[in-house]
Length: 437
Image 1 (cartoon, helix red, strand yellow):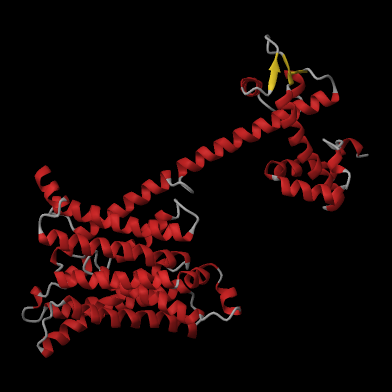
Image 2 (cartoon, rainbow, N blue to C red):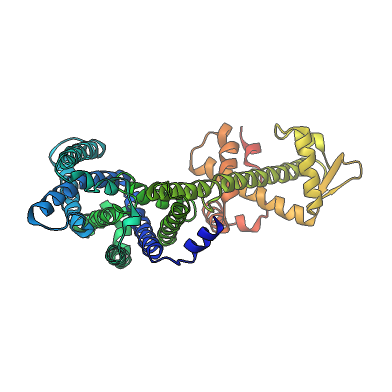
């Protein structure tokens, strides 16, 4: 097993090099084109186009038999698949334009009708003399092991074309994905751009027929971009991650297939992409479940810390600088043990000075400065809500509590200018709730 692994990994066999190069290039191109397809919310269009290519493939095979052309030529079959895929895309657009059916219904109709026609023609081919050896099934389930050098060159040129168009029209595709209405009003050629993007998807679908097959080509158009969404909010970074994920998934799938000859390569490529998606779902830098959970815990801890500091300041403002645990507990419905733990943490951070018994404490220099900033932001926002937003006095404290934690200095300055030109001179405004009748 190890000898086979290193033989595959070191690309010692010519067929391995061809298959790996073709599969990785297809995976990268699919991830790149699929990024825009995903953002356009047309992921199922790739599945429809994949199924719509089957009638073209079978018809190309029949024509090849009729005119004496090699029916096993992938380029000839790809030409038929391209024509059929474009026809399927045109049928979807025609149904959407001439009827009240929504996108999902149009996609379902075209997918089922074209694929049904393809299966019927495939059954007819298998009844012809020599039809059993046609090998068209490899385009349904994928068979990259049969890829030749000419096929790999075709994949290379197609992948470079997809990457070049996406790079050259990156700004236009971005606008198309995020604000189509603005693009229309600004005079951008939205329909030609949309048609070009769909053309790239057709090209990627054709390229993927031999690698993962008709049934699975949509997976490489959707899974890598979906996984990339967990790593970045920047579209350029997302596109690069999606392309890398598609290429890496293809690489892993090809290696696994070489080590386990009984398993189909296309399925292993898709499973590799699914594994990458699962990892991204858990630990993705931007939206991963684990990362998001840690960020939520950190945000909750920060809010609790700020609430305790503000409560201590308000207690000291009303009474004596030295505050007891019971006085702070009266401000909010905290649990006593949680409050003790927070007081201990604030003491360790140098914001509080606590008596040895732990029964009372007071803000020191750093703690007092931080607490004044928090109370100031809260009261400025309360004053704004009372005077300018017509918020009910009974709700003003709660509403201010929702926004005070995200006020930056620019917003604070704007509030000061709006509320009182002398507000800058007062370190902490008075509590507006005490002035209410």
